[in-house]
Image 1: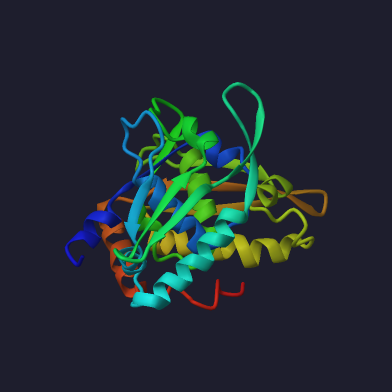
Image 2: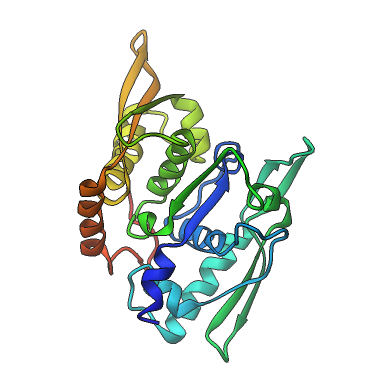
Length: 264
């Protein structure tokens, strides 16, 4: 297992931009890591979604924790149940809107300490045989993030910065309400200052410290109210990526919390 971990961390997570931009959900950091790890097992030439199996001890070690054995199984069983029970709407290629779950099957094999997962078939067109309008990133860059919103914003920025040059910044603007909706926070943070300080600023710090990109943002007002956030996205050069890798290794081991996500 020790030798397999670096290889597993370098897997590519590839999603059509519509799966990132046109869905509304609020998943914990660990739920998003499970989905990303599962999607990273989808091969580029797969024509249908398969049953994907992984050893749960390997997955938790991948995330940098020492949880093993029965405790690992119990933790994953509870996390996967919550994930299986969460649903969201997605617009299919035929224009119809479907209610989906991320996962539609979970089977534990205690004899091999493994779990088999199957993604919802309505997601398949947004994961398979992608030729254009997709975002990809190495699984490694999200594994040490502690905030689920950091991972979600990282993916949103990846989708917007498709094909960006490391020497050229990309700008993208969202209304505050639109961004809250993407993060599943429509009914929270009526105070924009709290939203930016507790969600956006935390995400920017984690993304800038741990990932392969740098982001900053500017608040844009209409009258006295902050209505928009304009982000500047830049890819890191080789030296900056090496620093980020060092930060990831420092952070490993504490990001998976049995008691849930950190309170922001």
